[in-house]
Amino acid sequence: MLTTRFPDGAPNWIDLGSPDLDASLAFYGGLFGWRPVPTGPETGGYVFLQSGGRTVAGAMAIDPERGRAGWTVYFRCADALGTAEAAGVAHGEVVFQPTEVLGLARVAGLKDPAGAAFRIWQPDPVEGLDAATEPGALCWAELHTPDVAASAAFYHRVLGVQTSGVAFPGGVYTSLYPGGADEDAMFGGIVSSLDDPADTGPYWLPYFGTEDTDALVARARELGGSVRMPATGVPGVGRLARIADPHGYEFALIEGDPSQGS
Image (tube, rainbow, N blue to C red):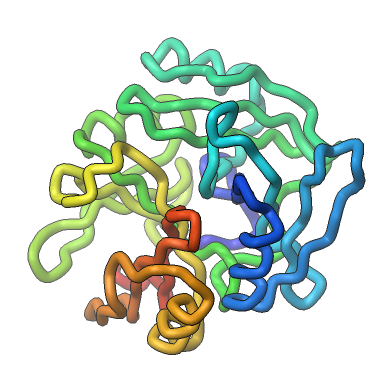
C-alpha cells in the first residue's frame, strides 16, 4: 500500500494545474473538504491543499497553452539529475531539468516514451505529502498506456519499480511496487489505454480515498463535475469510480485498499 514512508520509486506528491484556480479550489474543497494554504507570491500562487492540517496535494494556476494542466503525479528519487538522465537514455523526454522548488525538493518534469507526463521529486528536505491511503488523500496511481510491457520496462529502468500480475475477474492487472520491497508495498498499476473509448492518450490517473464512493460521486455532480465511470464494486479491492472535475481533469475515487487485490 502507499504510505508516507515514500521509498524510491513510489508516488510522493501530486498537484493540479488549473486555468481557473479559484473554481478548482471550490470544487475540491466542496468534494474533499480540502483547505488551500497559500505559499506566497514569490511561488507564483502555488497553494498546498490540506485536510486536517496535513498537506494532501498542491495546486497552481496555469495557462494550458503554456504548461501542463490537470493532475500530475510525482515519484520519489534519490538523485533527480541521474533519474532525468536515465529517462532520456530510455527514450523518454526531459520536459524540464531538475530544479529546486519552494525549498522543498529538487523536481524534474519527464515524459515516458509513450508520452505520459510525470515528475520526479528528490527530497530537499521534504519527503512528500503528509498523508496517504486514507479518505481525501492519494492512495493509488494508475498508468494508462498503449503498451503495458514497454511502459513497465521503462519505469523499472528509470525508477527501479517492480511489477507483478494480479488476477481479477476479466483479466490480469499489472501492479507496481518499489524496487527492493515486497508486493505488499504496491502503490499503483498499469492498464492498457487501447481499451479506453475516450482515447485521451497515455496518462497517470490518481486515486483518492473515500469512505463512501457513491456519496462522493453524487457530490461531484452537484459541484459541476461529471462521472466518467459510475461507482463500481471490484471484488477484493473496494468500490471505485472515475470523475472529471468541471475543467475535465480526471481522477478516481476508491473506497477500500486497492493493494488488497493481491
